[in-house]
Length: 335
Image (cartoon, rainbow, N blue to C red):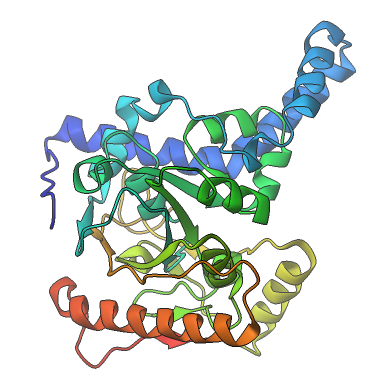
């Protein structure tokens, strides 16, 4: 089932769409630094009546990202997110019904560069998620370090993301009554370095923590593939063994941060810049894999379910790739 999306193509609408995506990119590139800078300035100029209460709150509120976060409906309803979705545009597609009496883990693939498909489809009120999956609440899990930065963490949580820590995922899946969906971008930062147009390489073979969480909580697994996610940016060629990839892998191993060298279009021209290309994003939600709750799963049970998940993800990709312009000979590559 698909909810059709027809973005406006007037000059004003295109300007608003560009501005919406630009502010989103700049927030994630620079808002962390700005937030830290503000706190440093408050300390240097001794505005203690501002920074001391906030730091006390920061300490008190430290575990909130692991306990369901603190989303604000009015932030998720900002009109800027409507134009954000229209820029590409993006569309959420359902292939099977889900039971709102159960909890689910959506495994989102691929990571791409900035994962706008995950944010636009699962963190805004302009998404079709509620129409396609009534009775469900979505929780997009992101890396815990994003919540370490003062001020920025408040903005991030207000949009809906929560921590991808074990505690953060368990909190969502332990909610009584069902109707909760944990969205986990399985490939993580490592997969960013594989995000090239026309490439379908997924970092999945060694990532089994989400499978163990599904077994522990009896949450059904649902593969999700976002077609078009890797087409938004070009990345400087970085094959394994190259000097660039060696540096990138070293930085990732030391910090957990991926630093791809990317480019796409500009704000006012199409030749070069940090703006993503206007490429359609189709986020397809696959068939749920029923999971029997096992409080202490064995390595064999985890491996079996992990393999089942990979096979379902392959089927999802192969069944839908032709609809979205991917040649039939293309297949997923797992590493």
